[in-house]
Amino acid sequence: MEINKKQQAWLRMLPGVDHILEIACADPFFETIPRSVLLHSVRLVLDRHRKTILDGINEIDEKSLSDSMILDKVKVGAKDAMTLNLLRTINATGVVVHTNLGRSLLAADAIANLSIIGGRYSNLEFDLSGGERGSRYSAVEDILCELSGAEAAMVVNNNAGAVLLCLETIAGGKKVVVSRGELVEIGGSFRIPDVMAKSGGILKEVGTTNRTHPEDYENAIENDTALLLKVHTSNYRVVGFTADVSLKELVAIGAKYRIPVMEDLGSGTFIDFSKYGPVKEPTIQESTTTGADVITFSGDKLLGGPQAGIIVGKKDIIDKIKKNPITRALRIDKLTLAALESTLSLYRDREKAINAIPTLRMLTLSFDCIEKKAKQLGKMLENIGNDRMRIELINLSSKAGGGALPLLELPSKCVGIKVRGMSANNIEKHMRKNRPPVIGRIEEDFFIMDLRTIQDDELVIIKTAFNNMLRDEGEITSLSLI
Image 1 (spheres, rainbow, N blue to C red):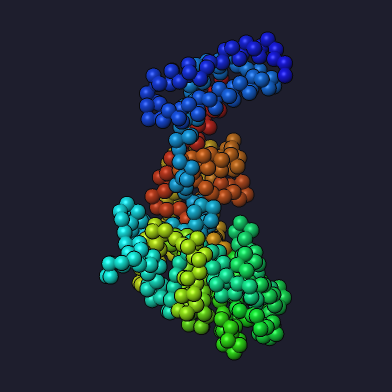
Image 2 (image 1 turned 30 degrees about the vertical axis):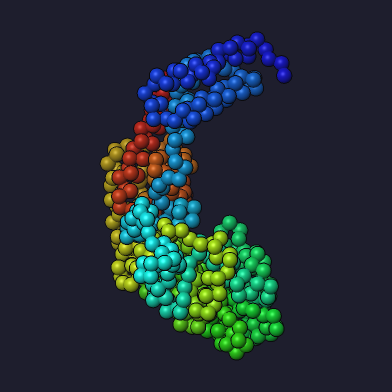
């Protein structure tokens, strides 16, 4: 690769690493920056300049090679490197259990307990009454049995892990009968057939996509059939000409042939949401009462707790699952247990749970409450006093999210924003780059913020974000006119 004279001159102008380090050490900005971070940032900036020069595609502004300009870029790089990747985010999308934004918010009680257990030693696997080693599952087993009505319970790291563990324990190397219409795919392209294959269970599909009958299960039962599996299609619905086998019917077939029945509820709930809207979701208590031998569900969706896979059911089966060596690889830590126990404790009082668990509170929030908050935000944005900004209150629908209640449309009040001279995509980009980021959605060239999922203390942050955006855009416009 030949280097021309101009490139050679630019390379000579480029300062060395040691020279920039020496200047940086005299700058108060870098007093709290570790030397390793500073060194990496300096090298990164200089390498980028060197590559730009050698590529020879663009003309180089000699001012960009000055010590001060390079140091400014080093500061930006060092600041970015010192910023944590996992950030608090404002969810203005209207999707309550938003997988990409961390799913369910924890209740205040759970957060307080996390702080205590995380910052101190605990009796995680120590039996205080006997003074000997105990089981971490005992922290939540009793309350899970109390709430669900099951004989026994345990918890692993997520529901996919719970399903995998149950299938491997009960049906490893044997057949599992499941309706073709229940072979769901969850987030990240994980499918029930794939999880079953990893467990060693042999999939036996019955029925069709839209219709499955009791005799389909009975005709599929063979000598090596170990389990009848029902998967609740929590993230989609088949409507029209349909038929499926209820859990009650499946339990009766299982009892007839002495084959255990397992139900994967996915987004399990202890609350009957039909009392707050038109959609009925099966509760964990109902599945237990119906007689399923083992039931699995998530802790961080409709339950409103931390990520976890919860297993409840008959004691003899749960005891076998606990002894499976795979349990060790899927076990949860003390922080998850602390948050989960606190969340579950709130369910002892249903009304208290709905008010204290953010997911339940947002799902059951009245339209009037949302509208009041939308008007408050609208007024705050109007008070910015920028005539470029158009603010409208719009009636739209929120979603439960998290692969739960797919047909549920929750009436909500949103604030829609248009800014003269800016596209909705540009507004969305500015809000996404705010700290904390404000994540909304775009509809009909409006940047939409759904007040169902915006917390009360976040309204002032949103106002500040828009104020900063309009100020920055105004400065850019002014400079372009000079």
